[in-house]
Picture 1 (spheres, rainbow, N blue to C red):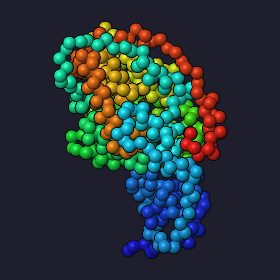
Picture 2 (picture 1 turned 180 degrees about the vertical axis):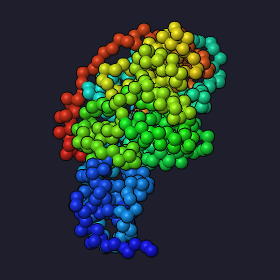
Picture 3 (picture 1 turned 90 degrees about the vertical axis):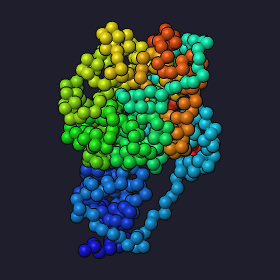
Picture 4 (picture 1 turned 120 degrees about the vertical axis):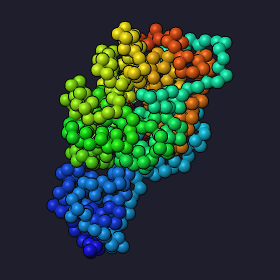
Length: 498
Ligand SMILES: Cc1cc2c(cc1C)[n+](S(=O)(=O)[O-])c1c(=O)[nH]c(=O)nc-1n2C[C@H](O)[C@H](O)[C@H](O)COP(=O)(O)O
């Protein structure tokens, strides 16, 4: 028997903590008891108590979230939407400015390198999204160092080699890739674009590179897997081990069932870093799918990072890897390793590899760049007979050119991960933007390999790079002080100069 239709007036009476109804897609839900469990905190729901919350709900919650998280009897049935008073949505100054900026963005083919996407994305992203995507921790010294470090490595190109054909294809953990570059895990994809992480899936499928699906995605895991452009499309999964191990176990079983090919366990974030740009903009959007699906109540007062990371288990240690290996057959790679000692330990444990990474400078400030750690790791592995294709080395952080990737390959990495540039590319141009970014990298790669004298990736050897200056650091003074004035000064300034 279909539930009787509710009217807007009836729903509007339940507009407080004691009795809270919301309308989503024309259905009313009693969320009163759910309020304290809501991952995004109570405030964001109470804002829509007694009203139609569809527009606020959709960009962040994967489909089916309410049905999965509420007991059946709390789904109250259809509402006669003709009786619901629709709030006139005041367009904010920021939204008006963004709409204007969006009309003026350059055509996609005028983006000639990955930096171009960042410039465009800055104009079309909301402040919360820009702050979250672009921020690094503390003074952002490591975030800048990640890219600066590549500037201290120089090529030693060889001449008179037949480079009429160039092949930059490779395989990561045995899975084919058209480039030694993969799309690394970055959270909250829908902050930048309504299609979120699916933009990355589509572009990766079209260009045959590998995408690492993040635990903290805004899209549901199944949405991202279903967005594959072809059956053989390879995806890896980045996992934050949940303090509630059963949650992780359930997630990994699902990942394996859906054909994920490898697990990248993030080990550099027992707590997410203090990203002050992000903290300045109080995060009042709702968190990631992980919170929504696993009812993780969070402190929302300090930006997105704090708001979405309360479930991560800070007690995770080497012994837990035995448990992890007991619950999955997938290859395990540690993501966020920052010394040769931990790399050797991972190799001796028989893991499948490590990502030498500092989380894009979003965790411990003054951690060294992944490329600098790579220079330290390879000789130590070789000394112990542990340097082999059964234990693969990946690097991420600050990679913006194919030449950065080629430096890492010459120094002994299998492939490199890129994060922010692909976020910026889809925030501005959707999946086409990401595909264009990948094509740019392919064109750069072909040219660079010709000019270095390396027709295939195997021909890239350590003698082709001069890394003597690599561990000479210069730390540029903090830019955060400027940010606080920029933030206060421009808070009401719609000029988009965020
Ligand atoms: C830019 C970005 C990076 C994040 C990221 C979110 C953003 C917006 N998040 S975070 O919410 O925890 O910070 C993740 C994440 O979910 N898991 C993870 O392993 N790495 C995360 N990373 C780090 C990422 O996987 C790479 O290590 C980093 O992005 C590489 O540096 P570039 O951005 O300079 O390429």
